[in-house]
Length: 118
Image 1 (tube, rainbow, N blue to C red):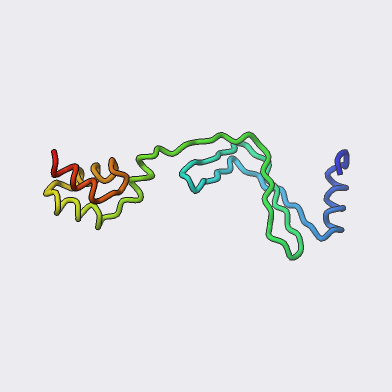
Image 2: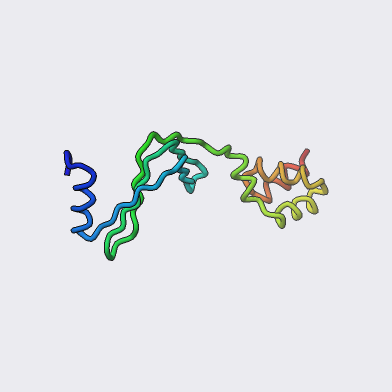
């Protein structure tokens, strides 16, 4: 299909039961499960729909990878119950307990032992 003009390509796709819709977008952001982000500025975006198939998104552009700080991701995983337990067991304030949990990567026992040993 290379060398085919866009109008002819759309007709051919329609005969195959596929529809293409172009979407104007300022940027596209993809959030990775590892906390990273891919951002495509000023992309070309097409939505391709085919019978009995999941909708496909076709994104053209230069992605920029943006890493999330690891501390903020760990911080999001620490829950209030863990903070309260460390506060109670180590007899410290909330911020100290939270910091110890972040430094121990959420390991409650390690955080308590570290705080009691200091």
